[in-house]
Image (cartoon, rainbow, N blue to C red; front, top):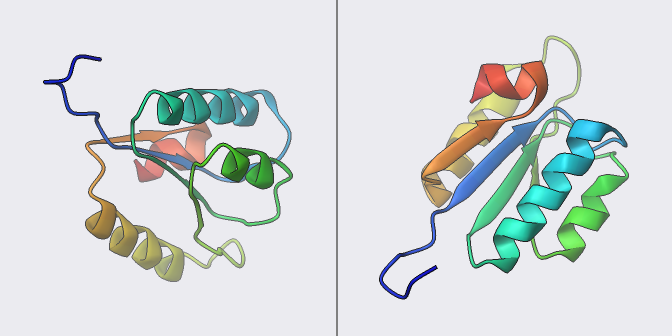
Length: 103
C-alpha cells in the first residue's frame, strides 16, 4: 500500500463464529487485512462461537448483535445499523446466506 492510499475500512457480517470453513476463511481474511493496516470489524448474530477469541486476538473487533431467537430481528438490526453509522465501513461483505442477506 502506498503512502498516498488510505486503507479502506471493511465490515464483515456472519451468523456466528462457530468452527467451519467459511468461519475460518473469514478469520484468516479479517486478520490479514488488519495486519495490512485496514480497519476491520466483524459482526455476528451470536456471541458463543469458539472463533471469536481467536479473531479478537488478532486485534479485529467482533460486534455481537446478540440475536436471541428466530424471530428476534429488529433489535439486532438496530444494533447493526447504529454500529455501521458509527464506524462507516467503506465495504460491507456478507458470509453465508444470513450475512449476504443483511449486507
